[in-house]
Amino acid sequence: MPAAPRARPADLFTPEEWAPFQSRTAWIGPLLVAHCWAVILLAVAAGVVWPFLIPLCVAIIGTRQLGLAILMHEAAHGGLSPNGKLNDFLGHWLCAVPVGASLGLYRPYHLSHHKYAQQAEDPDLVLSAPFPVTRASLRRKIIRDLTGQTFFKQRVLFAIKAFSTQRDEDMAEGAVVTGRSVAPFLLVNLGLLVVAIFAGAWWAYLALWLLPMATWFPMVTRLRNIAEHACVEGSASDAFRAARTTRAAWWERAFLAPYWVNFHAEHHLFMHVPCWKLPALHRALHARPQGERMEVAPGYVAVLRTASGKGVT
Image (cartoon, rainbow, N blue to C red; front, side):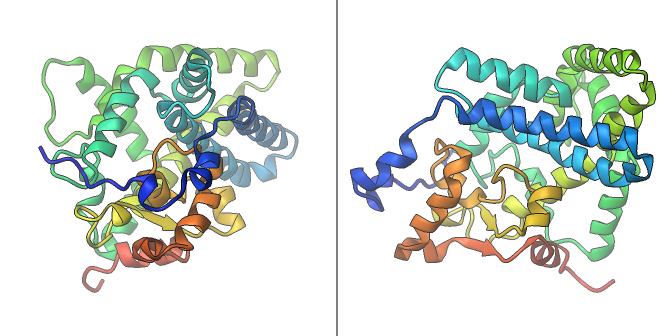
């Protein structure tokens, strides 16, 4: 099993230049988790008070549900807090469980993805290998996401398979993680429903939490997966091309790619750099000749054009 190629900080930076990227801050990670939940709660409140805003609120909440998954990912790398117990508590109970995941199950799976990125042993290779696809194929995938079909497949069918003795060889390991997390997920979501009932807006749980999770969240998760690794030439042999960074406009950060998830090439190069330092790392890398080898897209529309460039529809 050959591991993915690696880059060393010493090959690009002096110890003094690298030191700021190694430091961890105790308060930023918890603040990001609080920010994510604050945005969700404000969007829920806006949807309850002004129901005509519900479609916009669904998009905002669905993106922040992805934000919770991204912050769980940050916790998997120990980035939410220098205190390991606090890092894992925040990453599991406040980030992973509400959206149907488990930090404890996700961490070894995800670290395996980093170790074997874009190699045959990469558990996430199934997410990027099929691309490019036709525009019709991509359109069908997005329609399945927005109509709840992907949600049903992952949260119901995969949950049943994850607890069964038979394994579907085509089932991504990430979906198995979701399935095995079903009991805590149901417990926390029952709590959210109870809160909504006591607040006198039981329907808000369905329209402003479950509906975003069943529609917008799967779609932006798919778009994020495509942008990170699909159609990057040389990704299996060059550490600087293991992933793609996408320059995200403000609206893309608000509705598609929160919490610096778009800086994925930098994250794969140096996975222990906290997410909020990735923009600075991006600038530092591109000030060096090696940075010119990195795959950088001008935006998510450009990525989707590349990923759906197979054939004519």
